[in-house]
Image 1 (cartoon, rainbow, N blue to C red):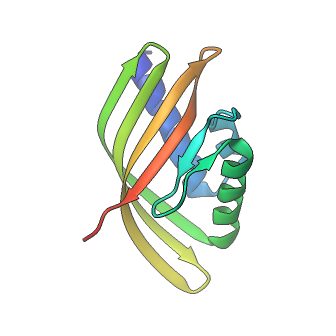
Image 2: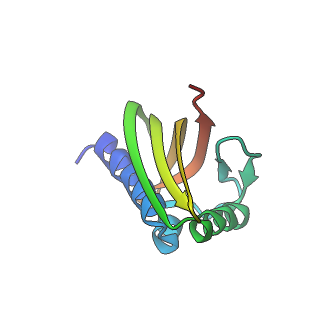
Length: 128
């Protein structure tokens, strides 16, 4: 299997964990390092796994249903670093509210111990 495919598989695992609101799977995808960074659309940066994990727990608790479609626009691998640029189309049901949003996202992965881990996720809302 190619490095590019391995990165795409790690990216898929991230969105699968996100969509299924699976905190254990999300934990397995992310680097637990203090330098990891997550920027949810319209939010301030979260640095380090403790802050990042709290944000995912909050999102998962507040959401009854989520569906995510992605449109990958670019995948690059350079040594032990790789990034995926894509469009996220998210449908979310929280309480009685149904929300739909699209974001441009960049996911940065680092290969550690032969496995690709997410070290940076940045989502920027697309304005219609």
